[in-house]
Image (cartoon, rainbow, N blue to C red):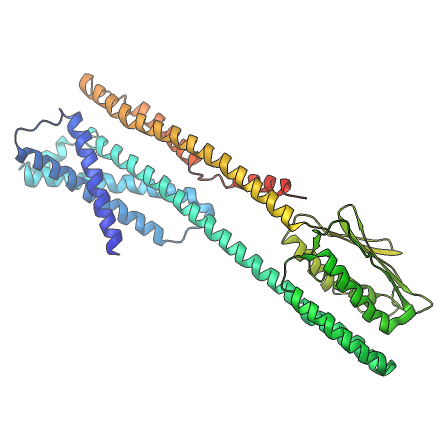
Length: 439
């Protein structure tokens, strides 16, 4: 709390000093008859700065305590500026009245009768400049903070979602395996014992791999072969499978246990007998691992929850833009899993990110240099124009036209440079970068 007040005090002093220099320059230069005259003039400028500054700051704090929706940002800015203008005019009136009545000894009636609009233009111009600049920088800061916060929320949400999906594998696999074991115990106790031994090895693999985002295709195929041997122990000649012994690239990776889920689904949804065997083929083709099986639908089949396919789809969607493809022509059920190369993806992503960061950083530096150059020119030229207008003919204050025209251009330039309202550009950049990072 104290730190915020301290910052406000410092800000008001700095603004008051700047206005003192500008105002004194416009009214005849920084020439004073004595140090006492200098201190009185400087003190009045500081009085105006602190009163008007704290009025506007407290008004701004009041607006910030209210809840504003994201689509009300323009409304918030307009209310802030209009309110600041009204409060500034009111503050100027009381300050001028205080100065005239209590320090200069002028009667209240004389003060009211001598007041003109021109008495308020300088103070209002300064306030508008400060308020608009403050709003622009404040909303830029808030926008950046919101982007960071949104990114953190998305990251945490996606991480939690991914962990939930991975944790579904453990109970799902165990439930189906115990069903197979239960069947074997009644049909063939010796096979059940062998099945239990193999199951313990397979289940250990599940526990080791289910926490990973990606896994070697070679390891996953070895696991799939072991898992199919478990199923073969139960169904014997009712199931045939073909799994490649070698792969095209040792760096290829897939989502862990995706094969196990697909093999489970094939067993669950089809009749498996020696007369109508289930034939499962696994092979590579054009950057995909294809898992296909013939369709021997069960006559009395529970409605599919599609948990396995949804799990695989969602887990792939969280780590790549490449889609899992599913085809069913009522004869063959085919699933195409994208084959990924994690190292290549990371290298490509880092290269794209580094190049993109350099280009954006260079452009941002150029934009900032151009903006601050324009701002410095504005701060030098506009006071000079005001001075020329004041010295020539103050009855027609033409300096307002270049001041507001140029000022509006500066505000628009600031919005562009500091990213206010440019979220759609970042979304498009991200979209194009994601397309380029496909592999």
